Length: 105
Figure 1 (cartoon, rainbow, N blue to C red):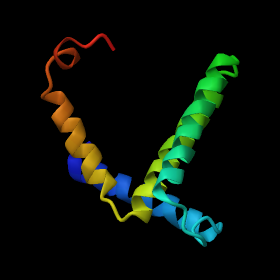
Figure 2: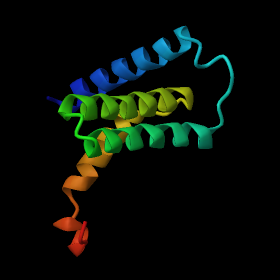
Figure 3: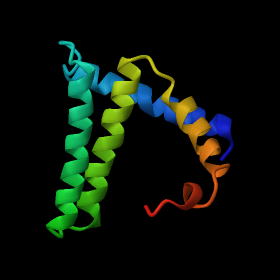
């Protein structure tokens, strides 16, 4: 997939996620950025718990989807070009040394 197609797809998804949140009332009140980060983190924790409880790959995938949805929604709320940032970061990561120069994990 070409970068332009990726950008378009991610921006379209981010717009859809944000509009759904607006339509469902999640942007009627301002939620501070630290709270948004905590909500994203809570979705990561739910993915971890789904895995720890052996709930299966579908449950883990659903929770990881919630992480991405919250990130896209937060990015749109902050008017960030998250699609461009993802593509640029992906390209930067390709140029990094193996294991970022020897990190354990």
